[in-house]
Length: 123
Length: 110
Image (cartoon, rainbow over all chains, first blue to last red; front, side, top):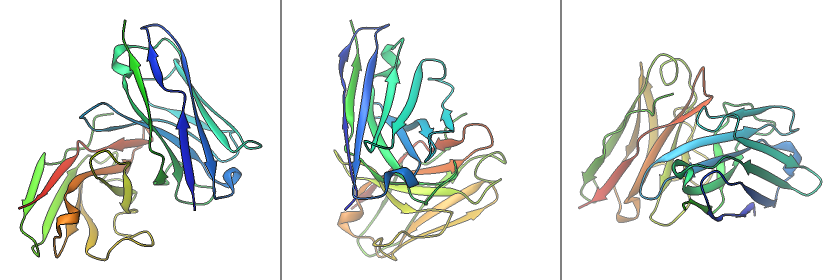
């Protein structure tokens, strides 16, 4: 069974940093792209960042480009999201999701998703 | 990249069919057959229901079907059941992003 377990969320002041992690199991991690999606409390979904299976290619939403960095460690089956210069608007539940397709490109849908980790940016 | 447009809410009675629309542009929905639909129950993670416009992942009920015409994609739920009450989001590959989600639709079974 595929499992994705996010961690690292918490309360941080504006301008601060946080590093999210997603531990994966139940599949060959190095064969799938991984993505972070966030959801503001009571609101909709917003794509944040995607990394290819090898880690060679990364993609970012304009709202986080230059502030967030997605990375992965295929030896530890883990994907990370380093978040710097955090703003109140970054407050959200952050989900980690696996590409549906093997060696998927950026067209791949996400399946499954983890349960999320909550990030709150507030002074 | 602006979010795709969905109706805020759709309702139906048990056994009925409902359709949720997802409207984009030539740069996303209309330009590619990479539209997905996700179901989200309260307090739960989203679940993939449809991908590449009309394909169902293994384990998803055949009561769920997808289609597309021009810049608008649609999700149809037939034989509506109480367990279908949830939020539904569409998503599309885009030429600029590469992903964009819809605004979300709350489905109520009355």
